[in-house]
Length: 556
Ligand SMILES: [Zn+2]
Image (tube, rainbow, N blue to C red; front, top):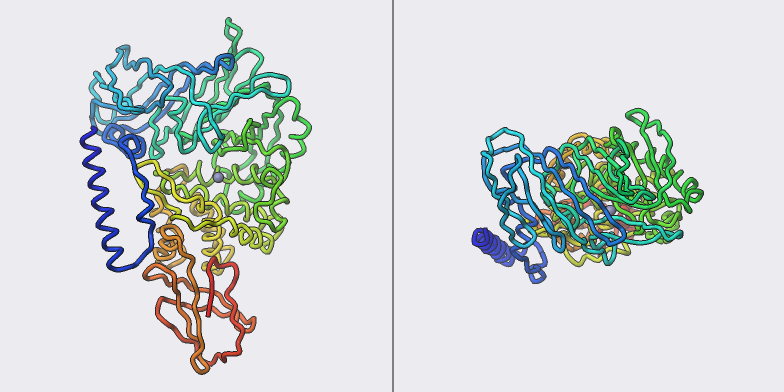
């Protein structure tokens, strides 16, 4: 395994070197070669579809654990069900230290396991026939990593509420679900359904994904909460939240019928929550309009208070925005529009469509989650406050763009790209909306994405191709520019006699985005390329302004 991966790594390095060389010769793009991080063997084991992962397809997980706030430990097992695609006798399961994998059992037999860092290679005894369904019990225990800065660094958060009772939550995007439970910790494969059974002290409630099927009383002063998810779910979407929760609920008349909305909050915050969570039906109104039906009616929608800012856990969105509008009370756009809504309710719920419904296969393509979701904030405003508000908001967020490195990260090594995937990504989509020249068509395209890739894991190429087809032009240079380069396209113009000449500079080769400009305030579409084009009969006195809805610069 080690040798294989090293060879793979040198092959990738070789390809990358060739790419850089060609890039240098032809000078087509300005990707950040010098900043390529160093990746390890562990990164490859975590971030690629290894041979020990590829041969089996996840069908179901049953995570059955006991969480003990008194000593910050978790122990239990995950039953992994899978279908054999291609017979193989070695299967990879991931679990990160300090959690310990205790034993793995198949059909009553304890199996030999070879450990390679955080990857466990399980030596199967039973013949794995193609097409057969198999089951594996993975027992584990330990005191999981505590998150230093949730949700940006993964791990457990062990806090106390105002009454001194435990207030516990998991968050693990990026670092991986294997921080706290053993699983196939790669995003390409999701189980079709999942059960989550969590045993907690008698006086506490556990909230996980999906619907609560039952609560069983144990004779040792604990209770077990049995949750069931009936849809495919991604690894980092799975969560455990434990507190002295109180619950209230309502039904929402949605596009697909009645949707159950369930809210779990700390006892002392009930009144505040009842007021602030009125945002949820408003959010659903706007986002179902733009994206289509909420993707998990069967599993209901829940909003769950946690001791950190928030996360898009599937069908149990977590909330820690302190019951106020904006992002912890701030307007990220600086336009005033950001205070018209609860950022965390809108943003994290937006991920139900882009992250949980449509999920990246490789975290390098994380823009698929964050760009569309950052843009969903603007669509929320569009629905409730109009198009002008929406534009001002997304344009206002440009001040946060760094253009430090490309939005797309490195593939197969669990690496995500620039934080620009949020607000630059949203501005890229806002620019794309202009190119569609038809807001209703644009809405149908956003809804179409959620239909076409319903409950799937996808690549950037799939999204790019779909959008190219819908707009009827090749958007490759457009996406190369905004996702794979850091330069802002510049519309350069000059006058020659009574002609306006214009072209794109600061762009990738082949960049040919049409652009809307105003000539003495009269709208005019231009089709610039990297070569000078000409529009006749425009005097040098003409005032030229490109449409600010495009994320570009312009100069003479
Ligand atoms: Zn997000």
